[in-house]
Image (cartoon, rainbow, N blue to C red):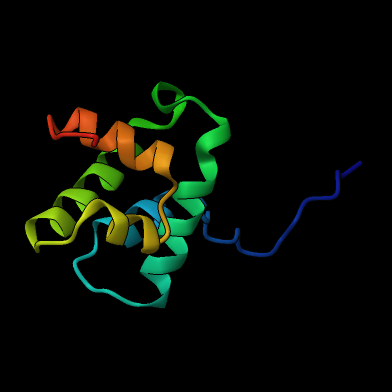
Length: 98
């Protein structure tokens, strides 16, 4: 007896975490980036060390880029990040959390 197998082509694997990281690593500003920042900012229920390392790197990269362009901490918070995420990223970057 033959077992029933799916004969359709397998769907491409979608990794939402990778999409989130790509949006944060991107230098382009836009709705996708703002949504990614809000999503990352909402992940504060997990302690920073428990977030995937690639996501932490993407957040640090995005926040560093914003600081480099002259944005203040308040503006980074307005961009969609939570205070906890910004504070930890600033600590990791060796910047003042004030």
